[in-house]
Image (cartoon, rainbow, N blue to C red; front, side):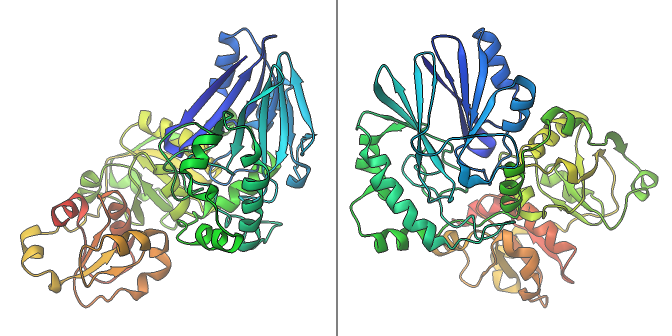
Length: 448
């Protein structure tokens, strides 16, 4: 028996393959692209016979339906999920046995009402639990992602109470030496205080995880619901798509129109001026030359998260990049959050009639009061580490909707913590406000 962990670092996502002694594999929470699981099965001369979804994920699209269609593997989920695809009920008390492995379901609502955890029994002993988004390393799942969606409107307090019970009456009752394998690590927006570790044990979590400490239910609910990070626009969309089942990854990616090079005014004039351009080039290149109606979401580690935060599901957009190679990789990343159908066209960009104003740092240092400073960090970041006393704090996810709150009687300087978010924020404000907009970019580090 072997447990193999797969990691998507951009989405801080962990998925798993469990290989039995008779060369059969069950996957848990697979990513959108199933290729790595197929490669693993081939390398081990094994067959994928099952896929378990611990819940319908909000932050990424799963390949469970594609794997079922291509391999015949059965999909195991809770009946509470109301899945729109063929599945085998896998609620508490159900078990899946293959070779020397037995997988047992525990209903562990809290992050979502349909969450399950999967206990792995080997040689009559529980040795591991796959906790999905219920128990993380150092944290537990947030309870506020089901307040929006097609058919669920659950209040965070209700789910927080369920989380309190799931942790204490289900997971903490497992043996101390049981290994803990979550669906996410540090960097995910599905929790707020995750460790960088990719696994743990029940004993270690009892000692170090705040959510397992002794406290009353009301104390737990207050702590869990406080200071949760923002919810990207794409989260409810992904929950609903995962409940229906997404189409094939390769087929979806191949449908995206791409390959054109826009390097002159004539080519640029062919673009629909009403469609947003997501320009993924580096900020210094963007500022020198870009197209009207653009936002600069750079090709970086959290690109897909910020795309799904600033662009709503269903809104068409152009995808501009520095090369066809980078565009191919970005389209695949976009597909991992289910946004590939919204790409009007992807093209290489080397043109533009617009340029951004560049801040004179010395002038700003001498008289920062001559500028309106907009801090687009999260509210908790701004509270814990203020930089400019009179800055207006509008977190980037709220910036488009709240841009009218920003005075335009002075030049505007936008900053974040390191320069990535301020590139997007300043480019967004340039097209919305009648004032000069500057990006403090990485120079913010000179003010800490």
